[in-house]
Image (tube, rainbow, N blue to C red; front, side):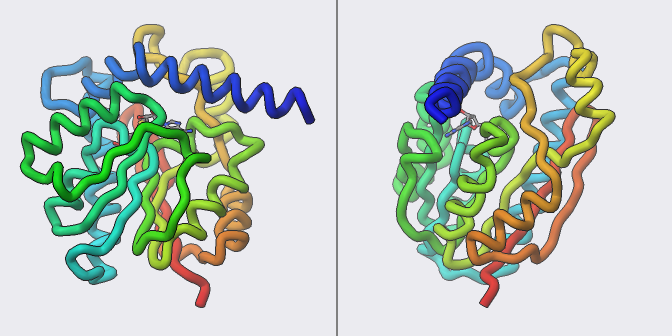
Length: 233
Ligand SMILES: C[S@@+](CC[C@H](N)C(=O)[O-])C[C@H]1O[C@@H](n2cnc3c(N)ncnc32)[C@H](O)[C@@H]1O
């Protein structure tokens, strides 16, 4: 038990230092506009596809202007900025200060800084209730042991949709990652935490939500399961 807690804390420290260091360089390049390697370009394009789908699902709920949206693990703020432009009030939080700094600069440049409340913090530190919660490409880094608890907590925090991604469990992908062939050396990232669909569905049930729609996005080196969950009642 004690060891588990230490391991989770250690995992978090590793994440924070990765996303404030080499992870920031990698991901901010992928999320940016400058030229990147062909591998990273497939990740950029796959991520853009995922975000476009998520934004269209979010907009289909006809939430009023000023609705509150939590973007958990906002990274460089791509989604936060896009939905702030739609008139929503966004709470954007990320464990890596460098990511949040970049997001603030970009939000200012895009003229929506006044509609985004930026915070540096981990998923555990988030509380409150929102009209919608989104969490993209973050739970894939979350310790598998704590996944159910965290996923259900975020589901509960949304009065409406909860839209998020996870890495679907796939034994061949797991095998490739184990032997280290998934990414060429320079493009490798932190280990992915793969989840079984049943675990995700159980987490949603615990959070008072049910699966409404899903899309599996596979584009080059970008692989994600995008889920929209809605309140059970
Ligand atoms: C791959 S990026 C995705 C960023 C953004 N959601 C997007 O899709 O553009 C993952 C982000 O999650 C953040 N992150 C990872 N684990 C976290 C945690 N436990 N609490 C808060 N943020 C976390 C990282 O710092 C990083 O910015």
